[in-house]
Length: 84
Image 1: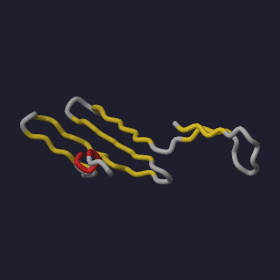
Image 2: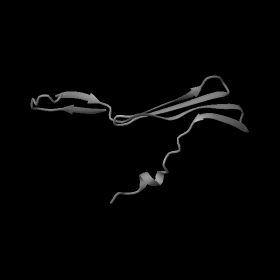
Image 3: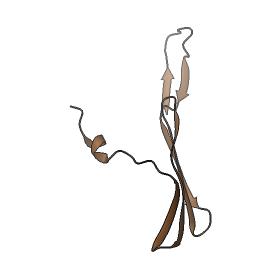
Image 4: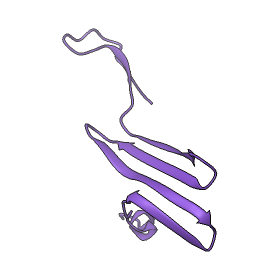
């Protein structure tokens, strides 16, 4: 959540407001006992992306079938590197 507030009156700039610049919504659960679902939506600066949306059919723990969209994320090494 981002708050923008200015002390001086500058037209036509909005003087006060809350924005959500980045957000990731994740929902998962069970439709029935053996059928699971997962939905992951990413809201960036001006874009809305569907990252994951799949069903997992888990009738037997030894064999599961997953159908849907999977986004392969970057590895953690890219985020752990220092820019300096």
